[in-house]
Image 1 (cartoon, rainbow over the protein chains, first blue to last red):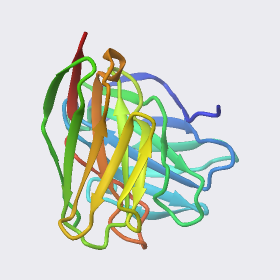
Image 2 (image 1 turned 180 degrees about the vertical axis):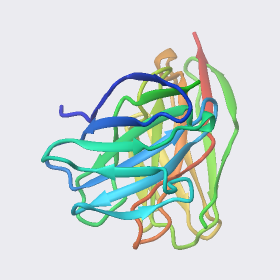
Image 3 (image 1 turned 30 degrees about the vertical axis):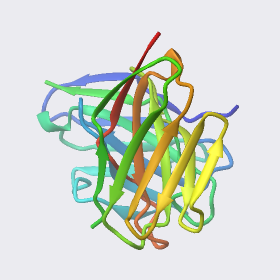
Amino acid sequence: EPEVTQTPSHQVTQMGQEVILRCVPISNHLYFYWYRQILGQKVEFLVSFYNNEISEKSEIFDDQFSVERPDGSNFTLKIRSTKLEDSAMYFCASSEAEQGAEEQYFGPGTRLTVT
Amino acid sequence: GENVEQHPSTLSVQEGDSAVIKCTYSDSASNYFPWYKQELGKRPQLIIDIRSNVGEKKDQRIAVTLNKTAKHFSLHITETQPEDSAVYFCAASPSYNTDKLIFGTGTRLQVFP
């Protein structure tokens, strides 16, 4: 069964550094998402991406964040200048549906630790 | 915006008993309600979902009910097994014009043998 994959599984970085989190969505899926989960808290929506552009973003997704689909398979989340409060588990998800939010499949996550 | 409340935060049951987790949502336009199971250190896995035009859906030992009038939906697990132990998250999709999921705060279910 195809799965969403993410790399790295764990990223440690210093405050102020740039990080890029990588995701490979399921191959025939059209919608891509990033969510984050601060330790012990609920999963929070960051951004959705369709047809090579952002379709929606949350208040968390400020100018320090960007997403890109650099080729036909990868989907990346970049944090330009990391802050301590960016420490969280970041999940990528993808969906096949042509009209959004249905059956989103999650990757295993990247645990980001900002020191 | 949409807000999803989930109760209880922890639930302990004996193997073979039933477990019920409840969620309420605020946006009456919400139209899609998935449930995810997250085992320790693993990804959230979709276990069942329901759309706003349906009142109940069942898949083997798992069922979900939706009350649109009261704006709440529930997950029912019957004949619980130790491997059902995990954190369960409900979620809602606020409207037809958005594709984001708003998650509840999670319920840690422990099934004791």
